[in-house]
Amino acid sequence: MARATVPAVSPFADTVGYSRAVRDGRHVYVAGTAPVGIESQDPYEQAKRCLAIIADALRELGAGPEHVVRTRVYIVNPADWEAVGRAHGEVFGAHRPASAMLVIAGMLDPAWKVEIEADAILPE
Image (cartoon, rainbow, N blue to C red; front, top):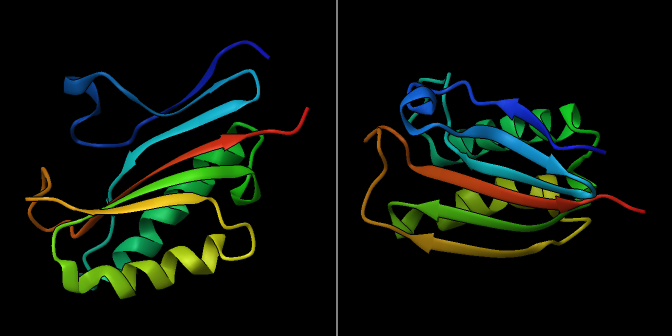
């Protein structure tokens, strides 16, 4: 398969110049995904929104959560780890990709509590 992309629907996409996801052969890379489109300040709900956006992008490129081999989770408040981790586990618990959760100083939008990236590999 030739390179394919899913456009990012983000207020920053045009300025930064990035795609939501890129597939090159068997590899799919989903960019840092913030909880756009929801009002909730709940870290669990925000993580669920990020993961739904990721799942949609994967699906557009012929992949699914079961193909994800690595995630990176960025949170602003260390106290949010469990709520965000629970949402992550609901999607990936059966497949258990390699993962990291990092506490960072802040997000581009201060309302965001979490951002998630994902890498997938499709079967041969």
